[in-house]
Every structure is written in C-alpha cells, then in structure tokens.
Image (cartoon, rainbow over all chains, first blue to last red; front, side, top):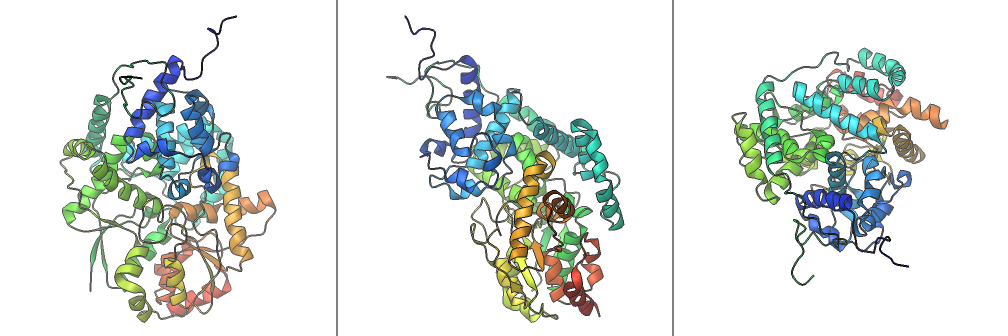
Length: 228
Length: 295
C-alpha cells in the first residue's frame, strides 16, 4: 500500500491554490486584514451574528476552513451570501479581525472565480444594483426590485401590488428613474476605476502545493520563503 | 450659530423615504442650521457595491466626498448605509497604500480630485454633540408626555467605526428623547441587525429578525419605534403585515424616524415632517401630539 493517492495534510489542489491567491490579494486590501492570522477560534463572531443560525458554516468555522485549505468548501456555502453586513462580529472579535471585510473578500473571490453560488439571488441583486447605479447614477428602487423578481421568480412581483399601492397613496413611489446630470462624467470615472482594477490584477499563479494555514499572508505572491 | 452642511440625502430619501428627508430638513432649519444639498450627487454604492468591487466602489463614493470638499463643508448623511460607506471610503483611502492615488486618477476622468478632507457626519451626532441637548431642549414646544419610545439604532451608524456613540450600548437617542419628555423603554435589541437587504434575498431570515425586534419593543411597552436608517425603517414598517400573517402576531407598531418625532417635540408643522407618509396609523397619542404641535 502506498499513500500516493491520498492527499497529504498540507497539500493543496491547484484550484485551492488559485482561490487562495485571489482571496489573499483581497485580504491585503483590507486595512489590518492580516489580523486573520490571529484567530483563536473562540466563536465570538458566531455568537454575535444574528443570522449564524441560518448559515451552513458558521463564521468561526469559515476561518478554520480557510486555515485548513478548504476554500472550495467555503465557496459552496451560503454563509458568505447571507451575511447582512451588520459588523457585530467585527466590533466584538477579541483578536481585532475584520470579519465582515473577510466576508466581502470571500464574496469577491467567489464572483471573480465564477464559483457556483448556493445563493445566486444575492449575486443577481448585486449585479442589478450596480447596473442600476451605472445607468442612472442613482438607485431607482422600483427598477431594481422589478428586474430582480423578473430574474428570480416573477410571480412574487404580484405580492408587491398592495405595497406599491400604499407607496403610491403616500407619495413615496418614484415611477421612473432619473439620471443625474453628470451621468457621463460618472461613467468615465467608473470606466477608469475598472481599468485600474484590471491593471492591478494578480500575476500568473505561482503554484506551491505546500501552502496552507496562514502562509501566503506573509508573502502574498505565494513564493516559498527560504528554509521552508 | 448657523453652521452649513453639505447635505447628502441619498437615494432612498429622495422619494420612498421622504419622511426622513423632509423631517431632517425641517429640524435642522428649526435649529438654525443650513443644509445645502450637494449638487448632482450620485449613489454612494451602498453595502452592495462595497462588498463586490473595490476600486470602482471607492471611486463612485469618493465623487460625493470630492463635491463636498469643493463646497468646503462637512457632509450630513442621514442614511446609515451612506454614512458608513462614505466614512469607510475616507478610511480606506487613508489606510491602503496607493488607493487614494488610484481613486484620484479615476476621479480626474470626471474633472474632480479629492484631497481627503471631507468629514462625514450623521444628524444624530450633530444634534447631540455639536448643537447639544441643552440647546435642543430650549426649543422644545411640545413635551412628549411620557410617550413610550423604543430607540432603534440599527447597525451602521454605530458600527464598525468607533464613531460618535458606543458600539454596544449607544445612548444618544435615549438621551435625546428623554430630554423631550419621552419615556424611553428598555430595548436590548437596539443595535441588533434588521437584516437589511436580506428582506429581498433571504426573506424568511429577515422576517424573523424583524419579528424579534417588534416583539422586543412591544413586550417592553413601546408605543413607537424610532429609527435612524431607511432600510431598517422600511423593513419594520412595510413588512409588519407580512410578519403578522407569517407568525400569527398582532403588531401595529408605528415606526417613525427620530427626526420626525423630534420635529413633533419642536412643535413643527405635522405636514412638514412627512408624517402622512407612514404606512401604519400613528395612533391616538402621537397624532394628538402632532396635531397639537401643528395648531
């Protein structure tokens, strides 16, 4: 019997390494993001989270999975999509970890690497929100909600009829979106910012199968350090 | 002393949450402050943008900071989400090397540049820390007369930044309304999340969160919940009927923006505070206070 077919602890698949690289680049962009290394697995984040009961992986487990080299498992979970961004975990973490920002980084990783989401509706809403902003410069809630339910279940729109009537009666209904005057200038700003983001895209992956734990945070290009 | 602010209403306040917009404008006017709306402001991008695209979202949000900088004024942002996003943009630009430069490179395409000096303020902060409770109290025309109030702060004005109030147990709303003669009830869920956008993406979870908030307020005898955030407000108000149907509850809890209730206490005309935009009947006590104020 040999053990060659069994993945050894600490050995990663190529896709895992790829996800880690994208994630670690995101973490680098969080002020004090490297504090993720200080996680003591106390569970204060999970205990503080008002929606952890509805998650399949708790926030604490999420960090443990990252440390163990299980990015794929995180990508499949609904946890990162259900986070409502209330920052309760971030303010309470005794190690000062920016848990909410870590959630954002994981969301961005999943979207950048096109991982199939267990909660695709969140990505749909996010993309429609961004489209809406780009088209008008301001958010038009009516358009956003209409398009969202057109994509996720058009029959649910009927349920909104009483609410829309109420909004109309109380003069809270904006029927049509309004473009800001500097709409074209805003579009140019967005386009340029996108170019900048592309310019700073990662270098080709330097694959090193030994990188798990918090390694890679010391050296975000994933190059093995001397003596390791 | 009149202080001028660059007013950033944000998208919700334009129409769907006009009660907040109208009451903020009226209250500040009554207290002698001048709000100058930032001309041609754009959406701050909210949590959604921030969580999925970095440089782009920062540039979009920073455009507003740059416009206010040109006016030489602090931004007044009543919406919790706008407040947090704009504040966070300032911090990220300061803390991530190269980011400020990148964002300015993008802003230049729109003929703008941002020096990083615009301070972002929330109306509650200005009311309590700049104007001060004593000054506000001198202007009170209508004692709230023991009205039982649950002060709901929500998330994003107290977190994540170490801001103008305590993050676990904020007290400014409590003090403000006690100062107006209200009876601020015990409301331990004052900073518990309402679910925000989850009402669209994970409705069941969000309904449960809002039910707990309403339950807590009701159990402690509240006659009204005051809010500081358009999204909290909408979830608690517009979905109350659905919560009742889903959980067999009987909530009939008026939800008011803190500036609306303060406006009533200041004796401002009910018609100018957007009280008619409420979905839930305000009930006898609030209505008579508001009408008395109007007379």
